[in-house]
Image (cartoon, rainbow, N blue to C red):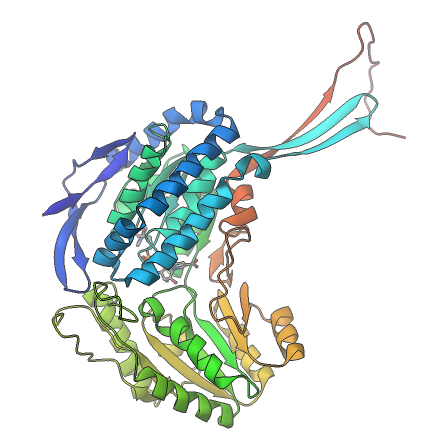
Length: 498
Ligand code: NAD
């Protein structure tokens, strides 16, 4: 069986005693195993990053950008292989994997502009013969801890910018689908990155805790579920590290009575069921304003869902694949059961999909549930599966109050033809990323990504301009070169200009 190891100082490391199976979710088979790094192995990775740091920090930004240009080319040239690896371990269908990769590549493209992005601020003559400027210096060794659902894109949110800024990096990807992440690390070496600048350790809590507790790690970027995000943020902070920890979500779409219903249904289909609903920006709740809108939405969704195809990533005619593990499938099915037991109506039931030739795969079919109320557990928790729940309300204010009351605030969307309503919504809703007739408002690489409330712990969002700020610290220098022979007198007062 293929054993997946780590990359430390540019070398593959396959030593270690602890390991766990990596499943192909479409077959249900454990086809590979991944090593789980011990504290000692993670410390080796940190030491390698620490050693590489001084030379990399002093490498001119334009040279660091050239590595990123080459890396982008290699990602594009090897796109098919990357998507194949994503499919084998995550289960995502090829064009969805290609979309993930493309969104990741756009972060590399943004990082290619690092000489421009690192330009500081300069003021001449802040005092007589005195100039002052601010510059953005790298932090040192920084770490990233990433989730299973975007094994390529989310790491690419982090390390290209961190490295372009002059930091060195230790990445701990998800142990559930590590191969595509390790493969892109190999491509970065091929692009000319010096050994030690980027290290990858696979592992579980032991690896994560080592990163959180080691004083050499100056900052931690995390993406994953909210309970772990909260733990990472509080531990990293207690240890004096900068931290951004992005958590879970429950994204609502308001469907207004004036919405173009056919368009809303098409958009909801992709946003609710694409990637089996395993996206932190998946639309998992439709809030229909008025019974007429709700009835029309349910009727059209029910009809459209007849055409949904769930199956293996190997058949590109499928709309979405399996969920990540058998345990996760059971959890998703459990949420459907609980909604039904709480009085909701399962309009389209995906609990027992038949996928010929893949009887042991971890599949859940597209599921539509009507009559969901805020008291239900299935409404309060993140399901992270291909399940769309419909909540009926009587006004837009009621819909907005519902969204604002939810503990998560990652993404949201409104379907309407009314510009005034849309503007009021985007202005006031307590959510970090808002779509207006756009179901997945995932910011492009030159903006930044982040939710509000318990969907993000920290101040700076991921990637884009906030990424540059997260991976650098500001230094402000004030300089005077007195003319030869000129001496300043002594002054005990605060320096001012009058
Ligand atoms: P997860 O929280 O289980 O795991 C994320 C990472 O944390 C993994 O690398 C894992 O090894 C590590 N981890 C897990 N348990 C840990 C523990 N007890 N101590 C220390 N480290 C631990 O998340 P997941 O299931 O891989 O991913 C799905 C979750 O990620 C969903 O909640 C989803 O909403 C969220 N997510 C959020 C965003 C966002 O941008 N907000 C993006 C993608 C995914």
